Image (cartoon, rainbow, N blue to C red; front, side, top):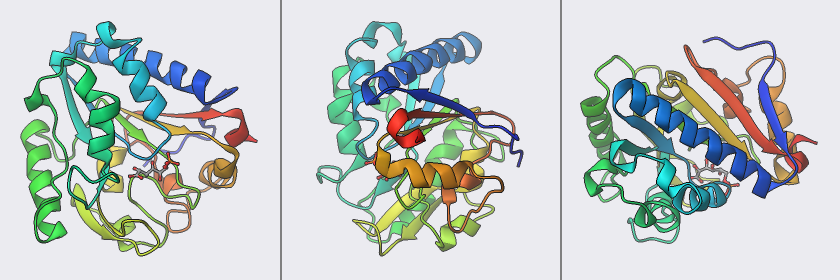
Amino acid sequence: MSRPDKADLRVYPNLKALSQAVAESVVELAKAAVEQSGRFTIALSGGKTPRRLYGLLARKHRRQVPWDKVQVFWGDERYVPPDDPRSDYRMARKMLLDRVPIPEGNMHPMPTLFPRPEHAAEAYQATLRAHFPGRWPRFDLILLGLGVDGHTASLFPNNPALDEKSRWVVAVDAEEADPPVRLTLTLPAINHAKNIYFVAAGKDKAPALQHALAAGPDPRAAPASAVAPVDGRLIWWVDRPAAR
Ligand code: 6PG
């Protein structure tokens, strides 16, 4: 796991400017990936921060993305039905996917209706393997958020999921989270992506951002600090309040 001595940190005045910059970069990545390999594989993040970004991709940049060549996955998911207001899938559909001409078969939500979340994780790993033939999935882009506690995707501090070394997807039980049961990509699955974009905004994220960028990775206390692409690019896209 390589960790550059200096993070690629890009600071914008506010969430609006930040979202615009990320949207433009995502469009460029999508075009380049489709040009190079005929597809663009992206794992979306949930929460509130990316909503504005998704809205820009759905409206302002709608025509710039070859949606029929985009394969959409998720980096994590709350273990709730897809129509539950807490569902990351539901949010992405509303803010982006229902508003662009992406084929239904190009969207690969994490399944959340298995009686046991462990089985859902296994099923999603099989879905990923069908799209990524190698030892690890190699997403063109993974979008990640940052929790105030330093979590990212659904990798929470001191959670056993942080120790996973071979599976791509695991079920998580994080009692501090709402809802506590989640599915998430594992750190090695994330770290094999070609591009990893953290998008974080707001002054409440400043301590977690500082901890994530501090010298050595501190996976247990700050899971986001353990995100370090094996052979790829990591960019931290933040607004000024978060960078303070
Ligand atoms: C989720 C996300 C999670 C999120 C952070 C930040 O399912 O909630 O994947 O990792 O990115 O919690 O959330 P906000 O953007 O709402 O602050």
